[in-house]
Image (cartoon, rainbow, N blue to C red; front, side, top):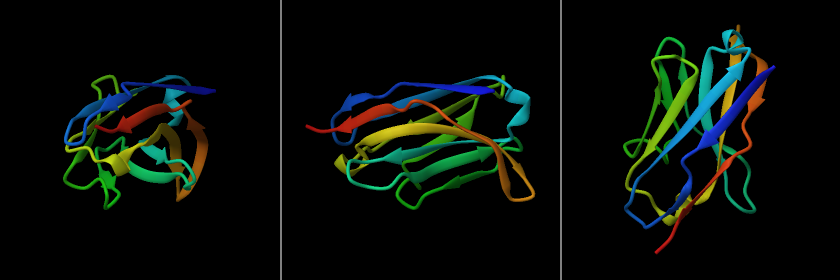
Length: 120
């Protein structure tokens, strides 16, 4: 079992910054990819960014140049630094972790989500 707990969401003005954190506990040895998704009201959940245990990263086009994903030294924590936030970034942000085995997602796990609201 893998548990993911997010923190760091909140209300921020356009142009502001937030840093989201996600801590994994339990079967952390079973994961080699951690990332962030978001879901806005009335929209499908979408990938924001992910990072592999080797340090490779991938970003959605909407996140490139503004968001940075990183992992903590203990490797069970992932961060999402969000700068230059826009109202369209408003969504519930979910932490995701899994083990990529030959392209298959094993032990795919999700956090409970943290609300990010960008508004003046």
